[in-house]
Length: 410
Image (cartoon, rainbow, N blue to C red; front, top):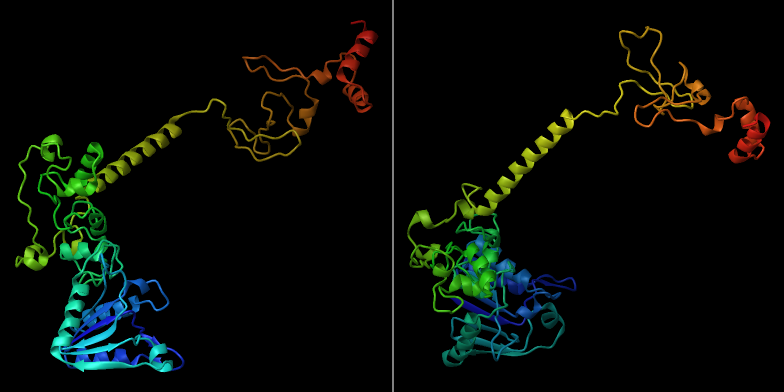
């Protein structure tokens, strides 16, 4: 009726061309065809090893148990004061027979080694091994996490969660990501503080668990203490008095869904822990308010940009002084075959063609700084060609000014 296995590791496949592990096939037939109850205890040391016992954990817990409905469970052994690793290679049948050996449950031992063991069919001897198995099976520590969901087995056992699978029964949802009490903290976050995942107020002091975090920071105490103790700072005053809560502490209901027959409480927080109202939490409301405020601010900024007039803006398309001419908008005063043209230096007066920009000797008076003067052409009596010729020959503007003064008596 029962098979209890205590193993250092259990490989799900055998190498050297053998294929599937026949021991696994035999156990699968036993639990599925003969309804044998199987408990598999594995050494947590090999969960990150090439042997990887997690493959066997997933096979037994998610395939055989969850999918096929077999009475089969596999867990990692927790450590204790006197026990760090599981080095057994034994099996107990119906509490009456026990295999005693040093045979590892891998392909190397079965296919390549000379191995020996003995099966003892004696209830008293088997009972001693079974008692040791039960001790290892029920031990809990602060690090072992059988299903690898980030929540240790001790926490999941304490609050009635599933230590052997990360998936919520009957759904594709991850158990650690659910918020069944709707307090804004996921089950994984609750586990970090050892708080009740089914109650918004773990210690019943009328301070919700998320607010206990602020109280803990204010008082310099641990989050775990704040969430689980009515007087966490041990100053003789209950936390709800110091934090300003006017309500009286309410009794804590530590019943889990498995303890209650009330169908309405079987799925707290909505279907599989999802809120019917996504805006139920304070964090979601704050985020929504921030989004609305940002939208209003953006709208006002756009409106101001559209309303503001730029004094330096001109309607005409400009023509640069290199002679590039672009189309300009037509006005009522512009002939159909002529466009209005300006140079990019808007302060310079030019003729109707862009090429005349270089011939201009004075700029347009802007009403503030006056009309700019082009120093290069400030030589009355000399032509532009003369000035350019001197400059091309290496004369400086200062030398030209002196020469011009000597010739013209200035």
